Image (cartoon, rainbow, N blue to C red):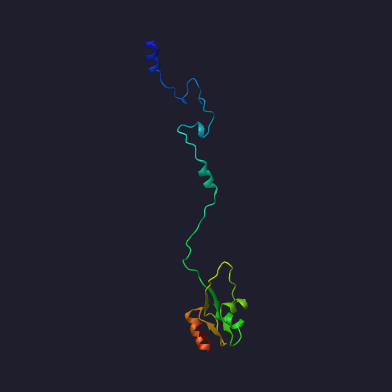
Length: 145
């Protein structure tokens, strides 16, 4: 009995995959991740993440929205002498198109082109410096609402 216990302690642990009686594959099957030493199965989450397309590019959104721009030459074409220019009249004359998603839209008048007509501007509009000079020189006025 004592001899059997000693033999059991002296018996070495079977090292799989190194030749010997079990053959070269040693019960692990043929190639692949599961047959390798130190195998770690990759989580399925990672495979799912890798399938999603990567979003590229710069992703900074400005804190305030840019205003819609209208140039003086467009106002000169669309408006008659003495008419008032405000957000509603610009939409009616189809000078600008306001998206449905935007409610508090700002409109800026830029100074490209010339203005020969006397128009009445609402002060809710924004003006560039060159546009202001041209508006004042044409005799148009800006009314405070």
